[in-house]
Image (cartoon, rainbow, N blue to C red):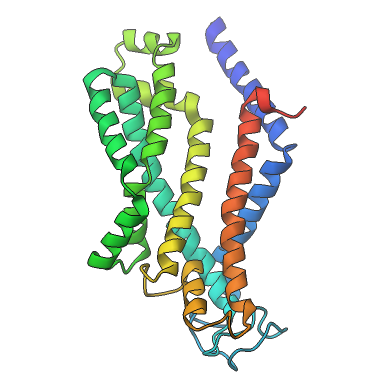
Length: 294
């Protein structure tokens, strides 16, 4: 009875302590505030926009920012702010899908390799190292060029399939350190199978670490997707922040002095990835007592 009443109390104390430091961590609050603001703009912004599609022709060409067109217009008379809002949605979607796929693969391989050890660990570790040394961007360039990616989902799938190795190695190391703990030994002696031990005993003790890993994968996927869009190897339908940069470059926005066409998408990509990194540093300070600022 003592164990069953003490553990929930300890968990509540840990959660309250983490929440206490979380709401006082400036890096975490600022990082998440930036990401959340841009995410809400991308999700709900298209609902209130007057244009039905991001590429709709709405007015004069090459107009600077004004009350009617907040971010000005392109050389074809398209509203840059409308493209920006729709581009945020597509960019976040590519990052979430790509990062989510990579996180799932990394967790499966990392948990199994770290817990099972032996020959299974050697095989999975060798496979991880092989994928790790493959130049990801070069592979994606070849795949895009020959197969022709035309959707965000397929693009995110290829990103997720090539960006998981470093996360798998990190999760494997954490799992390896936990598999010898007493609570894991007790679960094993009770007859619990490998899947349940990983899901119920090991994964919950790594939840904060897994969340921070996903944040990094999320940001990395956004960068890769934007890079592919910028060089013209992303989806051709719709709009994204990377595709906005590609269009601005292709139609000489810099030479024409149309700063309002390329600065907003570039600044948004930088802000999202930078804010995710800052938030991740803040989370590390929250979950790691040695790094907390009292």
